[in-house]
Length: 319
Ligand code: ADP
Image (cartoon, rainbow, N blue to C red; front, side):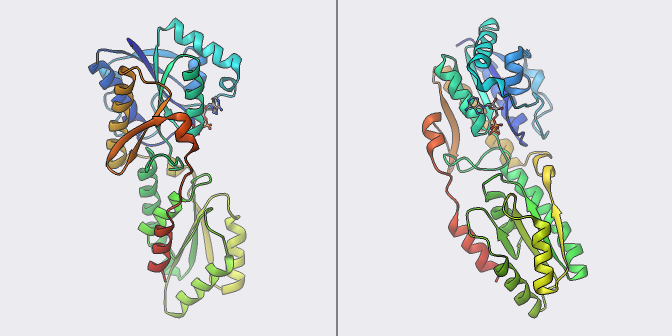
């Protein structure tokens, strides 16, 4: 292994830069030439590639987004598109690749590995929706952004004696809602993994009002119910004025938390270490305090388990 490439792909996440920095710096430490591939697989197909040095990753550990930029590429999903990518890798002499992204990006990395390029995946997504790892890079920053928003919304909600539905991201995973809901002291947390009942939310609001509660925060994971329709239903059934806040892409941005920077640094360095040992088709993750790695095929089959105990605790603490 002489030359490796690094790219960020799919949805961006805070901490991706810290991971790229770790790949570049530890790659150079191990005596490798490191190439930065811009705009994910799209840039790989187009040959949008530059050699990176120690200074290319200076001053980025604290920045959100990804300086390598990201993209989605339908072309890369085709044999022809991947054929082009393989040719580009050959032209640039890249024999190992670190892919920082989510499950889609890992499927792409696995396909390249099967076609002879040594690839290692690093999980970068705010959704925390990969079952093989306890945490993904960006998740911690995202939940901190959400609890900051909850605090601000709580101020105005309390002043008016209202309720507020805060819709958060997560694709089909309730972790952002659950973790931010517990940390933010939300009255109700609605997640895709648990049955949704508008009546249960209303009942809780009425109980809270009857004991003099001045505010109610309802954290709603995306893609479950239209938040505006839910607010109408709540107003009709409880008489409590209910506002809606959709946090949207604010959750994707911002300076990564210390947790995400450390996780990204450890994972990026591990990915390079695996490449130097000629490993391929593997993903890096974290279990407890251990940085782990396993085959991509295996990792993608592991079901993402919802933390039911934490969900129950959230319910108990918000009675
Ligand atoms: P994420 O990595 O965040 O899950 P996507 O699912 O959009 O994001 O995947 C990112 C990119 O990975 C896609 O645009 C595509 O180029 C590539 N990709 C996704 N699925 C596959 C697949 N089954 N085979 C090859 N490439 C894939």
